[in-house]
Image 1 (tube, helix red, strand yellow):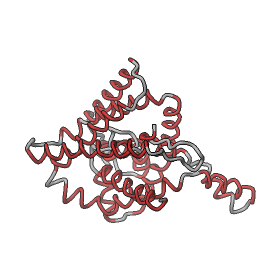
Image 2: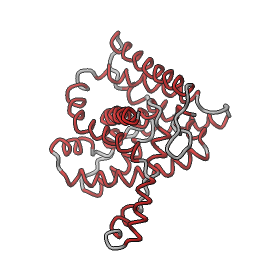
Image 3: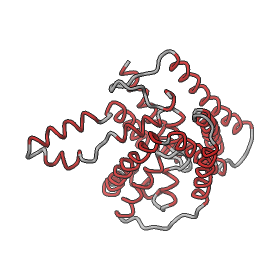
Image 4: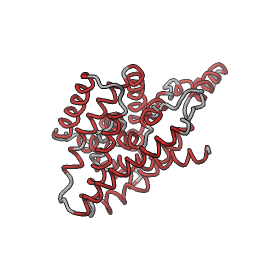
Length: 304
């Protein structure tokens, strides 16, 4: 059973990584589609940044070894490791295939598929928000306008220095875990997308390492904020995320060049896929929701 869950998380990581490669599509949106968004945020939050200095001091002092051990045991490696391996695998193996072989020839079909995915997901997440309150509509509109304005903004012409790449890592990873805001689009906006894609292809280590360091600090810090907001104001946060997804539709819709039988079919497939995942998750939860290793009910979106 554990092996099946690990394999499932690896596959979901593949889906998130594949989406993040495509400008205009957010890995956070895919996490919402797959029902792991809230669990992802709370799991990332378990990574304590004190692990870095503790690991250094543990070389010399026994008390820090105990502290390091305690922190490591609290991190959700069972969730994060297979998911991260899936994301990394997608970046290493699928970046060239998606960017060079699929997008240039099936642009409209791919973005039609993602449009269906995102639209259906936004509706389902909206249905999972608690009792309707007028203030929730405000947060939906705020998210929608924020995403639309950001996606409409002109890009910056920044250089490729290591400090800029470090900042790009922070901002793009924050965007990757926000539905509707594509991490790849942020890289395009900051004039780093093609440069980092070339660095990945040639395995140029300095920019890759600096980007990953920035990404690490960005995603850890931002996940702490999101986790706190989800616990205190879950309906407001989900309403804002729904707005981000709806506003983020501007990116895939603007890239659909023609509307024909193939694009409509891909759009419908996207809709049906999300609905099928939702029905499967609902049936599974009716048969008995999962309980995590701390004894608490699974905090993923579908277990609410």
